[in-house]
Length: 139
Length: 139
Length: 139
Image (cartoon, rainbow over all chains, first blue to last red; front, top):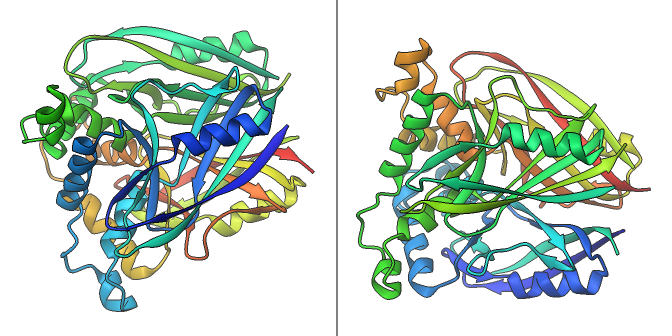
């Protein structure tokens, strides 16, 4: 059994961290799959998916970390050749990665209590995002 | 065919790198799946999964790298607001990521000879960890 | 339905970024799977897989970023104990990660228009690489 849906969401860009756990849980429940896995995949090259405790202090810490490891203001070739200002956005997204797989048991994802699935939008402006959610398994 | 198990292990925290390859291989063999994939997923938000050559020098290098990229002693908001001392642990785990997928052929994972699946426990204290192992495929 | 193939490719090492999107798309098409997922997994511990816009400026930026975050010339224990000179290669690969999962709909991967699947070869010399491609799903 395979069910594929799209979650559409609006971000503010600039390392906006968006908790998708509730919507993923809804898609898993709606799929009818009780035992299997869920794949989340963000379409686009300036956002990534990971898990983190979605707590405001930590979300701010993650933004600071990305700003420090991959600064916005470095002389990226991408910005010169493409006329964009989001070289850092692409690099951050490539580091975080676009896909995540979570096992499903008893119709629920096997996440920890303080472990949320989040979209990190690294682009420099608000974006309408699409996350492909695929549930695969048995009833 | 879908088989889901849990690997329980004890870590020392503080970037303890634990080789799970042997136990994953056992679960793959026990599942009866000859052709398919195995998902490993660590429950909790202060540990990650990746592959590395499990060699003591390199394990020490990985710890040094994490200490340098995401220092323990920075003024993380998480530590102030939550009364924890593990802001860096959460950030390291979010960078590494909680899930890994490895194809299975002939009942074995398609790992390289020097490529081990490891848990990196970034928390600041010893932890009992649970890794969900899901084997999906055909006999 | 599960189809597993191997993509063989030659890299130049030293952060060579190789676009695999076309070859993955061919494998998906050849598999006959119209709805499901594709797993890509690189065998070996000195290369990783991610997605990025495969644009020469950005590829150069990614190389610079890896050189800065995980410098080649640091005193890695791996280099002393193993007689290798690729401690940084292993660490970069562990950060990027070896596996990627992309949903498939209508026989096509759900990638963005500027989102390519790339192999990043972090080793210090040209390498013949093998990427396991597994397509799982229904016709």
